Length: 572
Image (tube, rainbow, N blue to C red; front, top):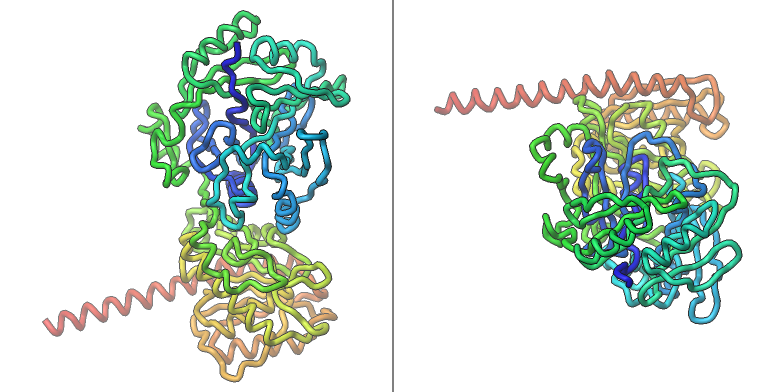
């Protein structure tokens, strides 16, 4: 009877498109194999992640709706999506989740004998429940070896299983067994495991009877549907006929460009799909370029310009080639160099205004912060600007910093010099990788982050267009002052700061002015922290000082061009 082959894909709902890309392609190392739109809502992306070619059984897809409300897991849903890895990769994934500050549980042992599994449970940023399962059978399934920072031997080998929650299991069991051809494998408490075909990873459905816990609510962080694979159109029609006989009211066959689909809702309320293996994701772009450009179905192609104008800007994760740029800078205490030398977040500009659209804020956190800490500050300072936010690579009692210190206020100068060079190389690599405006990078740093930003100004003039330094100190006294003409700096400080004496702030401002920088100092009555007054003053400074600076640069360039034309005319 069986025409169903196993899991084809799982489709879930997300909120922010870029964070979704960062998590599944960047952290988990899945390949973005298709960038298209929701065929029923063309102003929303539809992302497909998988192995190198998007093999059925590896495909995790998302509808990312910006600002979507978070859903709630409950009965009537696919609650848990499990990815397969070989058992020896479990340690690697524990370390990777730790590095990226992803909370997890496990590894725990599930099952026994040949079916024993090592399980790591975690969620994505929207709360979607996920597992990484170590199982020997994973090796038989393909994996993509092209993800930066993830060796192929540790890569994800498609799905292991899905776990569905239903209020009462009996009717859902009948659909799995009698209609779709699954067979019971084992039972643990209120969960029964079903499988199909060879019974290995990618063929498993865990059915859990939840009782009266309440129905799930659709939203970000929940699964929309699970699709089961069939070999071809004829197999799909055969299974569809069984669905009809089970009185489950399937849809007609729907062409989804990369497979043909039939949808129906099983008795527990879960939306199931039947999806054909062909034609696959290479139907409209070469394998080596999968996911690089927006692909639209024929009915929306005439409206491409309008659709592209509405969709948020996104960028692909860093490639292996770009990741090698800073490989030589990593040290024993550093994180992996798999992301331009730093664990970081990059958010493209969302504003079309001249200043915000051409500016990238380099966000540099204080001691104990991370790559997410200053994102709200960046949005407050210049709404719509791009943001590049690295995590400091030095740990002080577990707290990330950008460089070592020997005592409070006493810096390890050799380490400061090396780390400043690394930060400059990050900016250079990010300009190339993300297509940033070379003269549009403005550092925004607090405390330790402000100190390394000041060091970058003094050591590498020209890397930064300007800087917002909040609670900074003098990082070092240069033997020779750089030329900072044309560079604007805002310094925010507290007159009662016990960590940074007022004399330190004044000396830093003096140094920068002597080097030719245009320096604005804003004083607050408080201590070592970021106040609303500082933020408002810095935002006003960015809007007026940097905008005026840009106007002066344009006028100077225009004058130089006119003079060149005049001289050319004289020679003629």
